[in-house]
Image (cartoon, rainbow, N blue to C red):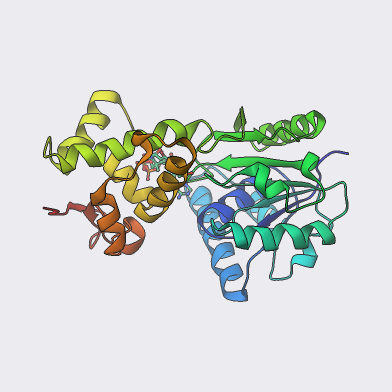
Amino acid sequence: MSIEKVGVVGCGLMGSGIAQVAAQAGYPVVVREVSAQLVEKGLKSIEKNLARLVEKGNLSSADRDEIRGRLRGTTNVEDLKECDLIMEAIIEQLPAKRELWSSLDTICPKSAIFASNTSSLSITEMATFTQRPDRFVGLHFFNPVPVMKLVEVIRTIGTDPKVYDEVLTFAGKLGKTAVRTTDRTGFIVNRLLVPYILDAVRVLEEGVASIEDIDNSMKLGCGHPMGPLTLLDFVGLDTTYYIANIMFDEFKEKRFAPPPLLKRMVLAGWHGRKTGRGFYDYADPAKPRPMHLS
Ligand code: 3HC
């Protein structure tokens, strides 16, 4: 059975991006959030992104209307029952995921495939919340989803190879480059990225260089689009701290341990761009100013 209609659970930053790319690729999409306000907020952000593409001449108004017409928002999980593939991008907390997956398992037909966008929780563990571990995979997208070309496709020891191939084909139809990986915390990208950005915080903590000089070094010396501390502000200090702790717990290696400065900033509520303060102050978002952290 091929994937014809998709469901997305969670319409925040990642979920709305996933819903957008699926609708742009021609799939009818049902997107579910917990409240009508959150459904509206998520759909508005997609409309804003599509409007930007029209303004730039990258999308016609007629295509925009068709894409928007393929998206249906809902607060009712029952509305996902006709979807062939359900992609979950809700809060990174296992109890919330457990509740969602076990209710979807009873609502959806046995043929439906389940995929989590988790960046650090175990896909294998999530699959045990259902009666379909053979039809359970990870589909890990990157922020901003409409721009970043990669998706990690994660199989567990229980994933049916035919299901895995089907999901790889689907990822290609979204216009993404799919990489194959297995269920190890952090998969490929975060396994490499998280120690790197944590090291940037250590370099700052040790007084080796300033915030701007660390960022400029990696931008101008290595051609990265963002320096590591700007990237930390972009991803969210709280999110990175959370992922790092899970990775440390899994591998027990020092390189995954969050540095004390990161922990203090998270405790202080300086979570990066989304809270207006992190390694930079975003009072003027167009001109972030480095913070004084000592
Ligand atoms: N949604 C849609 N489109 C967006 C966007 C968004 N949120 N943000 C930027 N864009 C588009 C712009 O419209 C522009 O499109 P155009 O080329 O057609 O004009 C293009 O992206 C470039 O944007 P800008 O010119 O405004 O800015 P930049 O050139 O600085 O690019 C960036 C912005 C794409 C975010 C770039 O800085 C970048 O690639 N940064 C690194 C992002 C990254 O590493 N992401 C991965 C994070 S890790 C992760 O997600 C995993 C998780 O588990 C932690």
